Image (cartoon, rainbow, N blue to C red; front, side, top):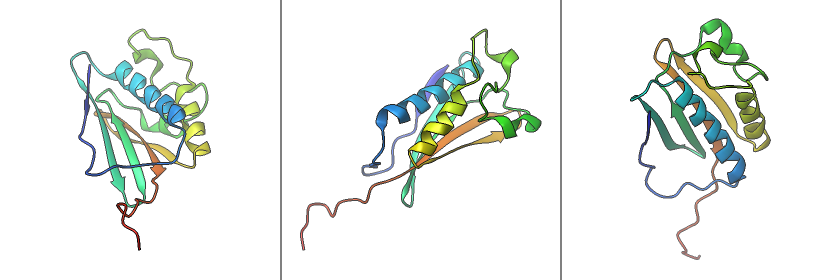
Length: 137
């Protein structure tokens, strides 16, 4: 597996948040993507600004998630596909903790599923207003 990061949008995107907790969430998303992505395949990470929101996506090309189990994806002790983690142990707490952390940070978390094509997990955080470029008056 390799990770590819799309180039960030022009200019800085600043969010007033707890960077350690955001890193913890992204580490979880990347760890899950690695578990469900075949050797030699690519995990995509992207960042985009949408109005006053920064959105970070982590996309794998694993087997995805059956529709009937998607409603529980952020529940504690829920495992996406316990039989397909390439022998990795999982507590089923990562996504639940990720959602709780992003909720506490005032952001949003979610996922998008494409049948047989994998999952995209995303977080959205409010961005800070851009300074006026140092111009006064």
